[in-house]
Image (cartoon, rainbow, N blue to C red):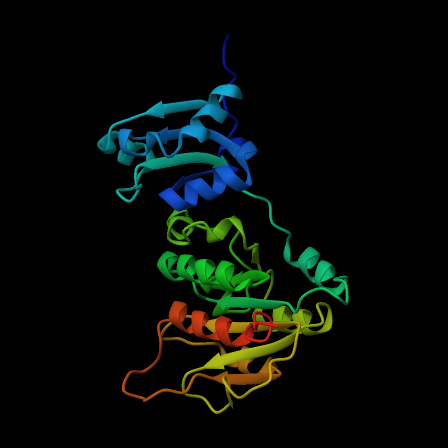
Length: 274
């Protein structure tokens, strides 16, 4: 049977995902989105159920050598598996705000992380892994091009394959939402339309100590890129600034480490044993 050519739109809606835990999470959470799979001899047994699913659903799968897998994946960091999958559809920013405002009053307290200009895939991936562990409701992303100007975000921004791999499956459990528009507008809409308390973070600015502050929910906690930190507009728009006090012997924490500390502190009452 002759196969129909894949349209540009369909190709744009697909993504290569590598990494043992990342690919296993895709199979467990949304097997229907798998388009094609590649495994090596070393991972064939572990991914046997996925290969069986592919066979039953007439999806292509291939047993390849590690060197060939690296070429297919366009990465040397495959961990013996690569999946071509449809990109999951997360809510846009306005839908996210609407849904947040309509959350049931008896729903668990919601904590959202807002990454302002944080785009390094190692940091983003590590933050998603942390977010999944602590039950963060969503991760908002304002790309660097938007974070340093009043311009709207670049068209077509999406989570990179490297970030998904480093998230070790966390990307399948936390919605990643691109914050449309300028930083000032985003901050205003989070507070007015979403009903969130907005917290900025800083390692050296004056503010409330993270460990002694009573976090009010629902909340959005903003983190800035390393070096640049958060723009002044976010600091001014925030309801409060949370300070991560330290020795001062280094300038600051890595942003993914800071996110882990903050997520643990912000959810400590949520996960406290009864």
